[in-house]
Length: 305
Image (tube, rainbow, N blue to C red; front, side, top):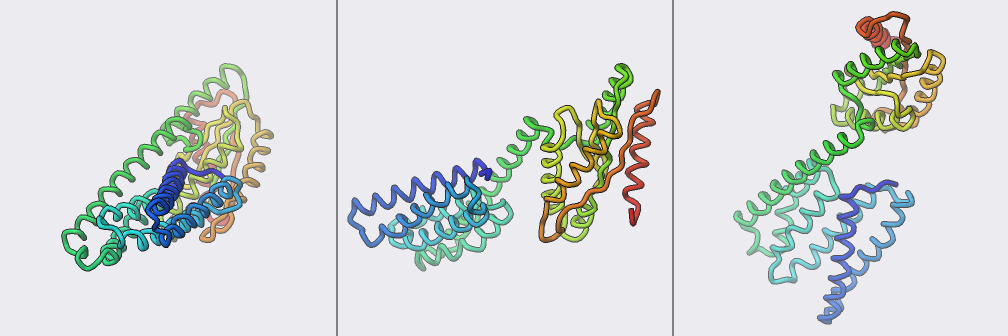
């Protein structure tokens, strides 16, 4: 199972902090406080390899770690002289493990509870504003880092993010010229995934984006490196296959349909794809070929296809 760098960082920092805290309590002979950080460290040592082997689901591991950190804060922070310094622990952990909107919501609602645990003297408007400001500042940094990471990943591996309409059109023009100059076949698989349209209407763009990214990554894994894939219009995709005739494109279409059916979410069920194959005709221009692809897409978008 792939574990993101952010989660590996959170797990590594948490493990080192828990071990250091348990040793610190031991050296200070606070034997009654050793057990919570020691148990959490053992749980992390067990869960990390299980995640790598795919035996433990990532969300479950994240939630267990988050609950453990919250429990550790409730045990440790009230007993320290500078309890306010502990306030950054649950906030930082939330943003390392959860999505930015969920972590921000959780931090805003739990900050008063953390201050109340520190004592009535800490539950002031100034401290409350400081805690909320820290949550908003962390959310801004986390959002900026996530956006930069997505941009870098897209630049390093554009196949896993798909091409835009303009890039796809340029790729089509280039491949049409190449195919005609070398007398090679060229086929395009026009794909339509109905669930992407339905979930966008029923559950919003966020779920649609998640399914779309999963779908694009799956197509990248099940197509050739010389192929071009992207979304020229909403819910319709092109897979441009140089040196592929209609029979080869049909085989690729069946293979992709089988692979796409493995993508499943409770909201949408298993994804299904329908497709049409368009092969370049002799002396056909790139503009005429693109128009045929558009007509094929319109046919797929008609009801009861």
